[in-house]
Image (cartoon, rainbow, N blue to C red):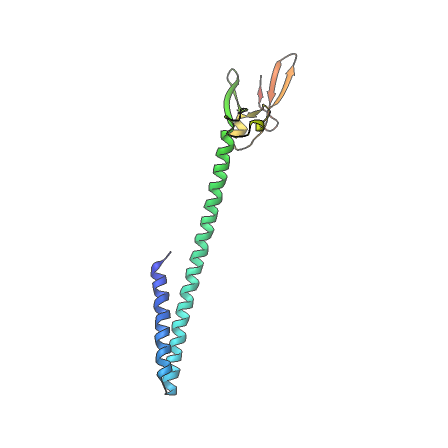
Length: 154
C-alpha cells in the first residue's frame, strides 16, 4: 500500500475543506467562482488519488487470492501424497501403495481404510493418480500395468 498516495489524498481533501470554509465566508462573486474552481480541482485530485488507491488495492487482493489458491492446491497435493508410500513392487520396479491403516493414512476413523491399491510411480510423480491394473498371466506370472503411460511391472 502506497502511504504517500494516501497522504496526498488526505491533503487534497483537507485543502478542499479549507477552500469550502473560505468559500462560505466570501461575499464577492468573482472570489466565490475562484474558490469554487479551486475546490473542484482539489476534489478531482482526491478522487483521482482514491481511484489509483482502489486500483492498487484490487490488484493486491487478486494477487493474494491467487497465492492463497496456489497454497491450498499445494497443501492438498502434499496431503494426498502423504496417503501413499513408495514401495518396491518387484525387484527394481517401484509403485506407490496406499497406507491402509488409519494411522498410516492419517485418518481418525477406523473404518475409513481404503482397499489396498497401487499407483503408477511415474504418473503419480507427474501429478496424475493412476491405479495399476493387476493381471495374473499364467505364462508371465503377475503383471501390473498402467492404463495411461502403459508401463508394465512384472
